[in-house]
Image (cartoon, rainbow, N blue to C red; front, side, top):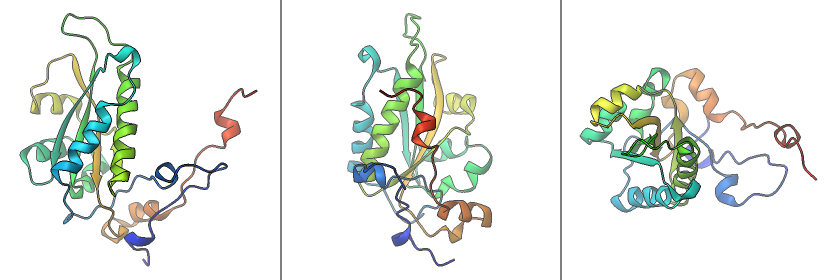
Length: 197
């Protein structure tokens, strides 16, 4: 395989010009397991998540973050399912995205999923600005993560985000390596936008 991290920019084939951070963002699985993430970088991505938009400013999202080599990272990694466990251990950091489904008083937080998505998008853009790449995963053991971090019932682990430095895809198995360099695709704009006037 001739691809190297320097050539894996994987820009979009968008129908309209996008800002570079959105144009160049993609979700690798091949991470450099010698690259580290500084305290400042981890704080920056979490701060971006904190300042993301929030319905009625309720902010029903929480995070658990661990850098590779820490007990927190190991606990998160131990609760990844299936294919995710085969590659995410090389990331520089893993972040659990948690829904606050109700307040302490039992009031429902109906927009928690939306708000968590908003915050993870902000985290992703900030990570890219820091020279890092993000891959978000839904294949997790939510009950295992809740137990590992002693979370109350109203906090629901929903995703895990891997953050790190891109490495050559040759360290992945053949199928995953092919996906790593395949063209990025999305549905055409006219299929996504149902009405536009």
